[in-house]
Amino acid sequence: MSQEFYEAERSGRPPIGGAWARWITFAGIMLIVIGIFTVVEGLVALFHDQYYVAGADAVLVFDLTGWGWVHLVVGVVLLLTGPVLWTGAAWARIVTIVFASLNAVAQLAFVGVQPVWSTIVIALNVMVIWAVVVHGGKAAQGW
Image (cartoon, rainbow, N blue to C red):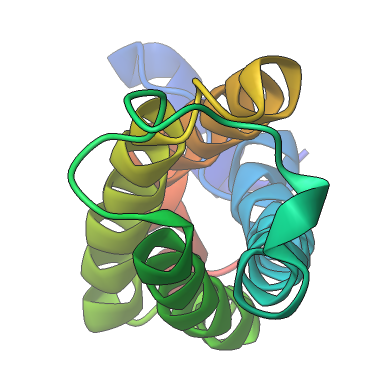
């Protein structure tokens, strides 16, 4: 084992790299997947809004077209941020946290329209936020 591993073990810190840093790889892949899901959800709301069955008071703040645009823009940003996250750039971690949080809130507002799907996407966003907050600095230090 490497000297860095033994030093980290003596200090009580997890070793840099290895399985801990792989969480950032996971977060980047999940951002791409979540981005695709969110873009598709936005496109359906924009072009085939009859797919969603919602009463007038089931959608918060905007109508389905408004939420379609929100989902489309947030989804594209998440989709593009996933690969950049792998570089370890601090700004990519910040953008990831901000837009994954924004997507979780948007999904929460959309839960009256798609309750199960929105809940799944919220959980995936929370996993990505956790991975980036807890293990984000390790990607910048190397695998």
